[in-house]
Structure formats: C-alpha cells, structure tokens
Length: 168
Image (cartoon, rainbow, N blue to C red; front, side):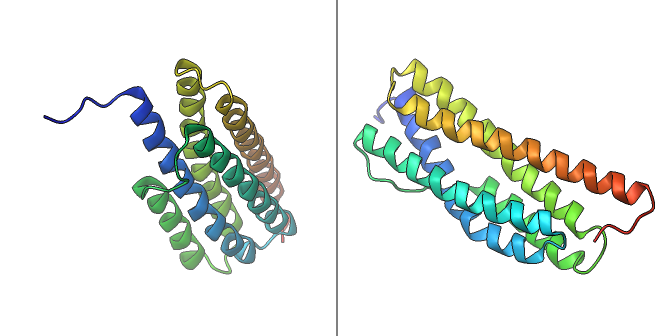
C-alpha cells in the first residue's frame, strides 16, 4: 500500500514546481527584454532577470534546509503562461500594442508566483520551517513589488496612448 502523503511532501512538491518555474522565467526574461519597445520595459525585464537569479539562490537555500537536492519538477502552468507570452511577441511584433501584451504576460507570471510563494510561506510556518520562512517571504515580497511596478508601467502606457500621443 502506498504511504500517505503529508504536508511535508506537498511543500517539497510545490518547492520543486516554483524552482522549475523560476528557471524557465530566467530564460524567458531576456527574450521579453529584447522584444520590448519601451526603454522602461526593457530595463524592467532585465532588472527582474537579476532578481529572479537571487530568488533561485534563495530557493536553493530552502532545499538545503530540507536536506534535499535542489531539483525542479515540470510545471505545466508556467510553461503555458510563457508560451502565451511568446505567442504575443510573435503576433504583435512591431505593433503599438506589443508592450501592453508583454506587460500582461509578465503579470500573469507574477500572479502565478505570488500564489505559489504565498502558499509556501503559509506551509513553512505550519511545518515549523522557521529558517525557510524569511527566504520564501523575501521572494514573495519581490514578486509583489514587481507586480506593482508592472501595473504602474501598464497604466502609464495606457494613459499616454489614451491621450493620443504616440508612446514609443
């Protein structure tokens, strides 16, 4: 008979999921930066790439705390979100709506990460993984800050376009 799965198992599974996701995001961000038309967009994606590298390192520390090898587990959700972003880059290449599409893709990524990190923080607290909590919380805080920056970027762009000026 199979052993009963516990919250510890679920925590590790979700940790592997977000680790895989962060590695995929790290690969996608330079492509998004190259595709972005606005300088703020380019800079934002590159800054997020650097942040993502730090988030991966924090996740590796959490694996260490658990005494487990840092290993990802294929995450269909993030692959789907990234594939949608790539579709937008192709279909809207050179169009004034491209950056808006890139921002919306990036926010879909952020919201997925926020959901995962929020859950991991709660579970780490429940499991008494006190050393893991601040590492996961730091990642969550960064994702929330990035999401807020993307919202500002989207609104600034939409407002500029709404006024009839041609935003680069």
